[in-house]
Length: 80
Length: 143
Image 1: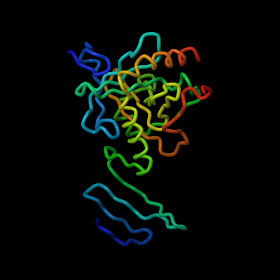
Image 2: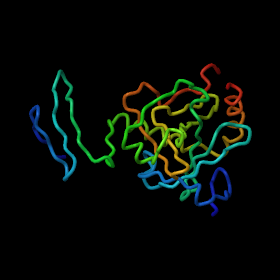
Image 3: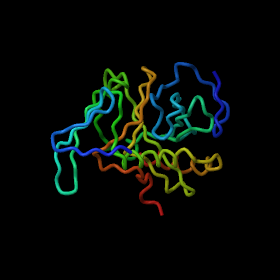
Image 4: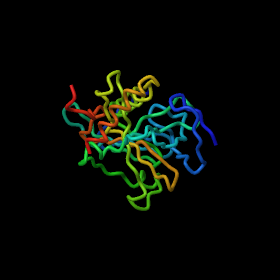
């Protein structure tokens, strides 16, 4: 891992088109400004990991669940 | 064309049904083609099935069925990626996680799926600054 020291207002460039600027440092928190191409997704890590974990869980449902699910789903339909 | 789903058996689909998810779903970058299919008769649930991997499929549902006040904004780049000319082009779905007891099933409201069937694209977006849960109970009052 590359570790760099930066001051407020300074930036780092990643490749040709990603720039991260240190905007503010307050308490234990750093505010970053990120410039990146639209096609580059920028995520807070903990949120990204949470979504990833939930996707993995959601993908692992089993065929045997089908019948039970059918019952539960009909209940949702009724709730409308 | 035909796809074979582990959960759903053989399914006949047309090329026009295929949705491109650029970069895949989060955690599944290798699979970027899906179809959105009715799942079980008499229910509101649908199956987001990978075209290229029969074992990969997600149960999804229209979140407005159980959260009428569900709302979020999509930014310009997401809108562009989804080729959305108007909000009417887009359908919103959320992925359902089904535990052993299906009454405890939850919906991921923080990572909704947006589909533009006309443009044949789809995308999972992350709502960073929302309080929506990844584990929202669909049947909150069941024991």
